[in-house]
Image (tube, rainbow, N blue to C red; front, side, top):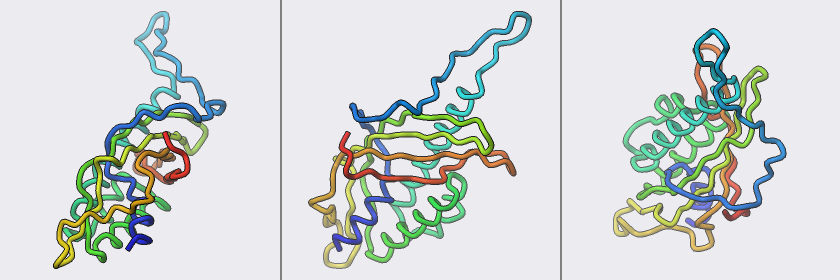
Length: 192
């Protein structure tokens, strides 16, 4: 069971919340986002980096909302179509597999991760890509058994870090035009 939870926790770092990552984040690759600029004779415009960052953060929030729903009810339905609204491969298949693991245990998540997402880099080259670094706080999120005879038992792995860095790469797809979380990397070894 601990091996399953560790695997589930590392990708399921998808149940949402607060954070407050402090220090240790390399910002040398950060593209500074400019504030909106007014053109002399036209309407206010937004720099491409700022627009990309804003769109990617919105997609990242959708990713968390749907992921939380899937983690709370992994046996409710086939979650792939719903998750595909916010994710692309390899993140999509990885998370669909984690939801399948939850359903087979059987278990579900309760509570929410604390989070504090920040855009750490923006590339407007095609395809546009935004890196978001988050600090996950799992102190109020738990894995709970649905197995007969142990229903409701806490299955959290005792060695699982409760606060750690989480990175997501969000990519703009052209057809149809949308932003999707393409890659996620829980960094359990990096407390925040």
